[in-house]
Length: 293
Image 1 (cartoon, rainbow, N blue to C red):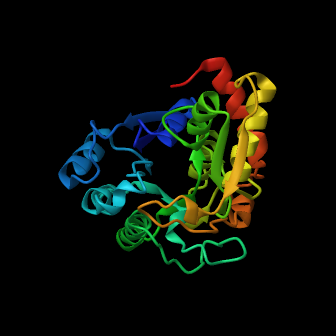
Image 2 (cartoon, one colour):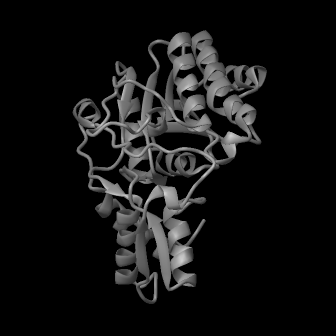
């Protein structure tokens, strides 16, 4: 018998990758925000009662980090109230919840990768809302599985990689922040890790997942340019200038260092992380072959 899995946030980068990579043993119901507003408790309860999933994967999120500073109420409804509603509905229906969170729950003052048990101290409304969502999930459903990630991109939707490709095709030079450090995450690899995690019924608590390695946004942009030129996605390289974050002020503060320690995930999921540059190369080749979406 197929396992019934409900995926929220189906129109987003991760939601689309989860839907595309669901195996034949999965009966996957993927719902977009227009189909299910997770901040509506009655709607959430109704969908779970009708579909009766064994597992719920919450990929729904308000991810406009800067806009969240002025739309904190809207962001909180999606990032905090939504996960709470899902946790309550899962508890009442005996479903398992796998909730996706973010590296932005950290303040970025560390000098070594953040482990799952590291102290949280978000510096933005987005980060505070996501942390509140984590707390609500763990309060309502202690056996829930929470996976933090960061710097997510794919050929779907809007993200740093696609923005850089567009700007590089339009300009001859760019300036990119060089003093914010993290790890890019191809949504495809994250989706595959999530599906593996669902197979381990006893896993709960907080885990971290991103690709392997470390870089700054400047390093990431340089790699995008080099790899895209190599396969003909860009006609010629552009000059990229490294700048401090202070030269590119944004409404929301961002952690200067948000590298995640994935050792526990690699061990418990029995997966080995793939270096971010290898994943970037694979995504760009897919983008060239299949186009934007």
